[in-house]
Image (cartoon, rainbow, N blue to C red; front, side):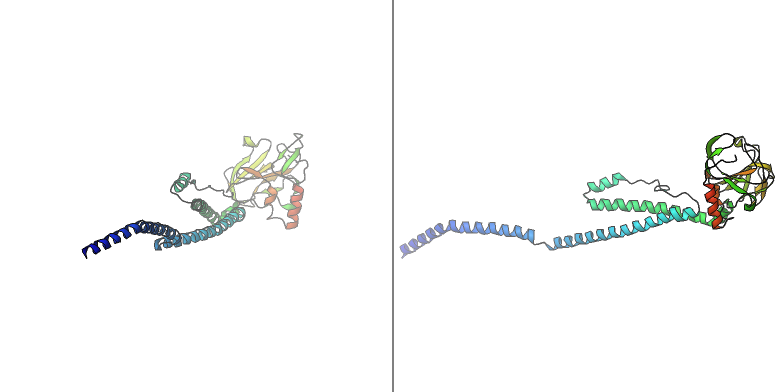
Length: 319
């Protein structure tokens, strides 16, 4: 009996030993397949945390796209304000247009963008940051500009009083003989810039101040006005000055305050002049400009157009 049991155990051990390699291979194959399936699962199936992160990233991309669209709208609106400021408001107030950076000394911080790039930020984030910085700088400049425009508008009454917007001689008592630009000089016998207009009239015809201001020159006491004979220069403020030359006589004194329409002298032919007339100039911000453009207050549209046409003719001036 005992012998039979021993034989049975030996046979069982032998059978298990024969099956062991096969079982090992099966277990190993199962482990490998399990690992493969796990790796595939990790790649194809997101964990709850990964799904949450992906949702957040998708939301951030949508927000970034929306932000850039809104920023484009704001940039367009700001561009419209800048255009109105330069070409309407400042034109009406006769002020110089602003340029980018006129008020702000701020420059874009390139190092900041390099730092963002070093932190792994995408080009989209960096470009959006640059656009935002530019927008902030333009808004600052525009805000300062509107402060200026508001101040100029509040002071418009003073500016209007300072604008030389009438003809210095009554229109029925004078004739425009020569306009602004290159003209042939009758005494110097050469073509040169004629920096004003020549209004011919009878000797002794009244000459009036064209805007409120203070007389800075009266008579022949200014060496910089050689050739102009008896002359009056009035500083009107706000960048405006006017000059009245070749006068027969002057009835105002240097330092006197005058109002628009006040008598300042009479037409004559003093200085380098070929006949009785008034040589009249308008200076704006130290630049001599065409006086005809300021005659609109005394002329109807037809008369003004005719005056412009005559003033543009290239002819011989009187002085």
